[in-house]
Image (tube, rainbow, N blue to C red):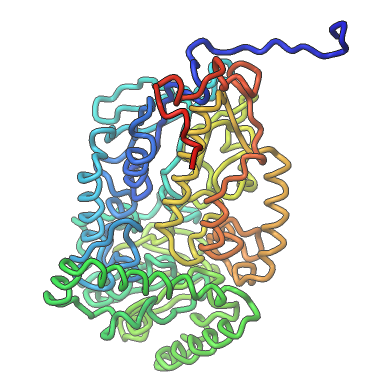
Amino acid sequence: MGSNGEHHQRVVVDDSLQWLGKPRPVRVIVVGAGISGIAAVKLFNERLGDQPVSLTVYEKNSDVGGTWLENRYPGCSCDIPSHGYTYSWEGNPNWSRPYVGAEEIFDFYKGRAQAYGVFERLKLSHRVTQALWNDDRGKWELEIEDVANNRIFTDEAEVLINASGYLNNWKWPDIPGLDSYKGTLVHSAKWDDSVSFDNKTVAVIGSGSSAIQIVPRLQKITKHLFSFVRSPIWITPEFGGDFAPEGRNTMFTAEQKETWRNDSEKFRQLRKALEHGSQGTFDLQRKDSEAQKQLFARCHRDMSAILSKKEGLADIMIPKFAVGCRRMTPGHGYLEALVEDNVTVVGGGIRRFTAEGLETNDGKIFNVDAIVCATGFDTTYRPSFKVIGQDGKDLRDVWAKEPRSYISVGASGFPNYFIVTGPNFPLANGTVVPCMETTLKYAFEAVRLIQTEGIKSMFPKEKAVEDFQVYKDTLMREFVWTSSCRSWYKNGLADGKVWGPWPGSATHFMELLERPRWEDYEINYLTGNRFGFLGKGVSRREANGGDLAWFVQ
């Protein structure tokens, strides 16, 4: 206390901060060069490119593209309209058809990576193995494996953005005896083009999106196909079907593509109509909505009409849970393939692999030449590399039982760490790519804050995480995702907590992130004083000889 009763606190001012909010040098590392990682570079260049900020992107694969580089199984394609699967700032008037295949999607996004200068900031075949937060230095210290040269090196950054995706780490099925099988074994996410299935007896394990695209292709060439279905699934009408009058067989004409190339406004209106339609279907996700009831009745009718051609098949394939509890999937040609004479659908579970094939829980043996495991990915949302935050805690351990994120983008106790497509990202709530963009913009706003307001570290408060989790779990009771089905949205549990979709529409998510709630963050400052960024008492205008009467109107 001073003699006048005032409390004096020593204010430490960084001598390099000569004017209010002068940006300090900051380094950002992005992990992953899929659709999100490519967008990250473009948004970084636009928002922070003129600031003293550096960016490096590390990608474990030998090329960009993420899931569209890795997934090349027969029939692999996007099941939403192609004109709704581009960045918000740039469409592709040259798509060949409404529902394009993996190769065409990959080519488009690789072209965007080249156009946006991604390769200038990108390290390919570089796998991040560990990220360790150094609290004293206010930096992430990373260990990176240079796969091509078989070496390990380190890097560091103030900000770490994990854009590696939620369907990135594929896994074999958790069924005993996998190594005992002597035939050909293939995973849908690690497809082997050298394998021939012609006139073979083949088993396909799974009934998710990948299996639904694979089965119709293999049915045409195999001697016999056994489709192992643990859980029923709704096959829905095509997404955006009004824009594809001939369904999956629709092709865009040369005249259409020329019109879209030459009339940017007409093309923009087409894209807006698709997005508006996609965004306007969220009411389907409410369990008791009229839209859900109508879709349930339509899907039941349509599926029954096809499956009734083979006795007992409808009982195996048609669910009783709400449409959308498992991911809605159009499934072009899937049901038609299941009723063919050379296909047998096997319900129930698989007990084990045998040397010659599979044994089901009821003791039946199925000997096959090849097994295709369309069994998906690790959907625990735990990062694929060590992320060690405050107090030496690894996020993989912290989230071992449940991925408790802050509104999908952050984790308490993990400073300056932002997640694209994290837990409860709106992956089934409407449009996807613009939600990725919004998350990246949010992260870069945080970078700007760290850079200009003297912030050493920031992470969501535990109370903010807890409040979001309570809100999310409460609201989820209204939505179809909490119906009783086994879904990767719930880590394969019938009645688990929903980790997948956002508890609301995609619009709801984007509008929330557009106005960040920094009050939900624990913030620590470089000088220990939140006003250290005020500098030496002058503004940028004064320091740079700017207009000092800007306020006069």
